[in-house]
Length: 200
Image 1 (cartoon, one colour):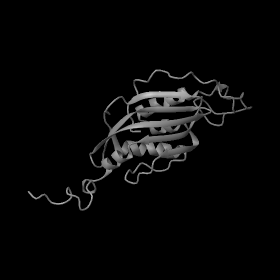
Image 2 (cartoon, one colour):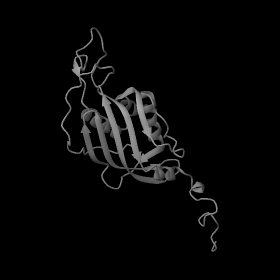
Image 3 (tube, one colour):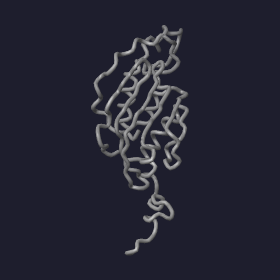
């Protein structure tokens, strides 16, 4: 995502989850380290793990604030990360760990200046159990080329024990790649636009 603002959260569209009864293995959103005897099932230091909706809403808030380290804190140590391969886009590559997630959002911020999208940045947030889907529109200006892109997006997030374990982003990769391409790569060799104009 390009770091679009998330000031206007969509209304709730699914009931909040019941507390997760599996043992916690990560820091979740609870404060303090896990110490002493094992906490009750579904808790970290006695605090219930937040449900998927709370985690996703916090994720969107942190993306809007543009703090890569705090975004990454919401992810598990190992992440099922998927953005379609796009060799023209320098920040798109596998990101299987929490540290990689922080690096992704740092590189994204360094590479893209967010701009106002066409349509609402966030259109829907749907949560069912541990699964969430966010849809909306993103836009940005690639700093290296000065070119802008716009794209609708859909983001699938899976939350387990208060941490994001799956991040699958679907966007218009062609538009993003075109914005990353220098001017001399925009035109295919031999195309009319690549050849000198008859009037030049």
